[in-house]
Image 1: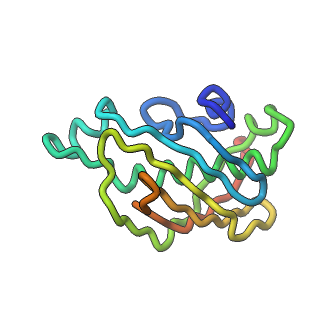
Image 2: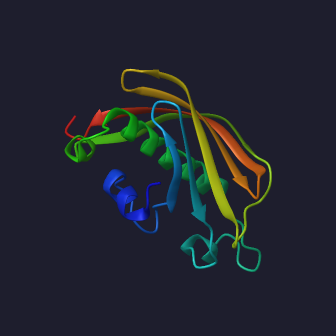
Image 3: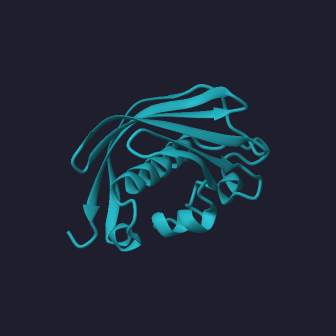
Length: 150
């Protein structure tokens, strides 16, 4: 299990754009399961939509991408915090994104990502998001890990 403090050591994101609360399962090079608790206190709900709060699909995809970044970093930089600090994940493409069920305050988004391909610094991931075991969104993500000083 990876808690929020450890997540902040891996990802550069911070409030309000850190969209992973905890990693509950990590199999390096294979898969990750992480979650985010969606609350009415999220800034995004001030404008999306007043009186009818819906968590935006783009934020769901970004949460998937952040979970994928953790998977890639922990797969490639297992023992070195310095190696993680000198790298950044850039997402290259998001394909076949589908949104099935609206996500609302009070939901717990569970992200499950599996590695489809990994070659060098390139990762292709299958991402799915669930609420109460119901598929709410899915996408295929392609990312590259690069040096920050590049």
